[in-house]
Image (tube, helix red, strand yellow):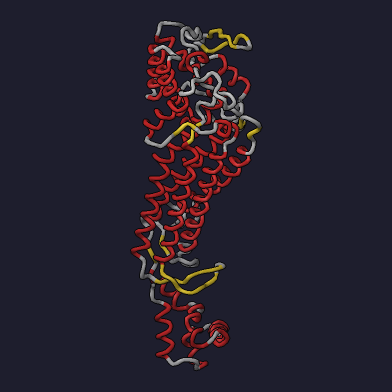
Amino acid sequence: MGERVERDSLGEVRVPEECLWGAQTQRSLQFFAIGEERMPALLIEALIWVKRAAAQVNGQLGVLTPETANLIVSVCDELLDGKLGDPFPLSMWQTGSGTQSHMNVNEVIANRANERLGRPRGDYAPIHPNDQVNASQSTNDVFPTAIHLAVLRQLHHKLLPALRELTGALQEKAEAWGELMKVGRTHLMDAVPMSLGESFSGYVQQLVYGLECLNRSQQRLWELPIGGTAVGTGINCPPEFGAGVAARLALWTGLPLTSAPNKFEALGARDGCVEFSSALRRLAVSLMKIANDIRWMGSGPRAGIGELTLPANEPGSSIMPGKVNPTQCEALIMVCIQVMANDMAAGIAGSLGHFELNTQMPLIAHQLIQSVRLLTDAITSFSRHCITGLEPNRPQLDHHLESSLMLATALTPRLGYERAAHLVQKAYHNDISLREANRILGYLTEEEFSTLLDKALTAK
């Protein structure tokens, strides 16, 4: 395997001849061999989109010649189309600004552009990674802009459609089961009756509110740091540059992206990312409650609650024949735990915006992108492989209702709390129904008893 010698500001670096990257990428491979997590592909793609927009704006503003700008745009298109393989090998565990991955992109674009002009890799003439590809830019405004872009594209193309699909599937169950009564439960104990549809309507509302929270929090990500360059002052950047890049990205994504009004906040803090992360955590909290409720209601099938029949997608045990487990619920719960942990990490990382720059951005990017991806996939799987095939176990629902002692709550307006409690204790200690206990105690006639219970067992 041949090598070429490149130079950067620290001296000579030997780079494998076949690689499109350059000296700074090679240094990062040497000094940051940490973990297995690479910089997310979605973030790299977003960096390329930013480079594409920046070249166009620089060409219009006279910072680059039209020929150079068009060449950079063309190389970006090659990369976005996957025509140049995967020349982005760096670990996410690197400098906290993301400089090495940013330069990885700059070097690849420069090398390919020069190659198309007949120049050797590593020559960087006439297209230099810093002077042309990075014109009017700094890692400090490009990298967080790419984070926003990557997360927003994933949100709109993946997570929001998946969330709407699950909400719709739950709404169908809520409507179909509106008259199907069940025992309510508080503290994991029997409570007054309600319909199964009412339970599911609560799940629907949780997700509706979660969707609203995501939509509110994404607005902070619409403000892009681009144009702030190193510390927010916009040094070495035409005044129109940030707004021009944001306008192009807005056109390509269909989102109302703008150049952030205060670049000092946009570079020094990642509060918008933290806010969005908290919205993802809120959604995970709702999903965990829903998944746990469903697996509890499906527990059994003989020795549990057993009020729901979950789809039997795969065998559940290597030793117990015929066992089926609530696997979709369990997978979703694990994803929710990971998203909650990611939010904790994103919050801590967001707090480390010392002076003019947050220096935990690769971690924030990784956590947000992973959370959105995991939630998207888990929600889709849960909706299609659990909720859609979910069925009520009507005999079990009826059995629990008939044996519930909390139906006595419907008698309290007539009997009063103390006598109703006495009725419950009589039924419980003698292992008989409320109806039988009432016959013994003689509090109500059969007709009165039936009338009051019928009202309690009628869905609103």
